[in-house]
Amino acid sequence: MRLPRPLGISGPSLWLPPDRQSGAEAVARGLVDAETVDELGYTGLPVAGLAPPEMAVEAGREALSAAGVDPGAVGLLLHAWIHYQGHDLWSPAHFVADRLGADGAVPLGVQQVCNGGAAAVELAASRLFVEPGLGHALVTTADAFPEPGFDRWSGDYGIGYGDGATALVLHHLPEGGGGRPADLVLHAIATVAAPRLERMHRGDDPFGPAARSLGPKIDIRRTKKAFLRAEGMEAFTEASTASLRAAVEACLTDAGLSGGRSAGGDKPLRYVVAPRLGRKTVDLAYAPLLSGVGGAELLRPGADTGHLGAGDAAASLAELHARRMLGPGEYALVVSAGAGFTWSCLLVGGV
Image (cartoon, rainbow, N blue to C red; front, side, top):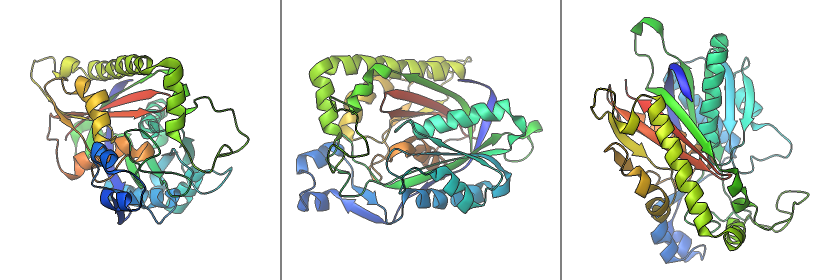
């Protein structure tokens, strides 16, 4: 999506629970084998004691405080997640808004699986331009993957799932250049989907009357095996590569950085940030394409977080800011991906 003008991102926050489960502990408990732990490359996965919406409230408080934004100034709150939020037939987005005191906000839930956080940013950006008087948009994500219903280490191929929450404030930049406008600046967002791959997470399973009616535990490996038997790995690889390339190129073009370079020929694209997937998955599915973008350094975050469900992109934005990795005139391309499949790229700059 080509933005009419850049938007500000303030207070990007990553909230992680204090408890961790190391790979060695998971192996000792028989949750995963040592070879898989090595391929994943995670030092450990955070394990929550709070429900996901409660974590989202914690992240939201941090984001609003860091941004200097009163909860009453939030006109839109978008909450994204992939896994159970703690209650049936219930809106976690409204819970987050209520607990934060964002009484004037319209809460919306976003379910685009692991791409949900990036999708929420894109939706918030669109709404800000359509409704200039909206004020501030708060985007939160939160997920937890507890036993026995979810196997965080071995329930999927090439991904370990960590518990945590993220939040950020999206807003218009002040006119006239007065003051510090934001922590990061959002210049472009691009999203590409390949709906023909939805079967990767459905497989041959019949439609059920309720969650986990086919078994007591979510088994993503089963559905992926069914897809690969029917379609073959090549079908997924071709669609994934083409879609990711299209998202990257569209985002850079919309930001005026075709090939990672500005019109003046310099190289302002400093980083390309991969999703928080396992090391082997990034090596095979993302590094071959992303390593060649504009001479930028490829970052592989998540060794200490694992995959954060809908929160990967926002977590990377939070870390880019917290570590002061972008100076004025420098950019990072943050890549997000989710089942369905959908790929999004966010081009952000330093201030």
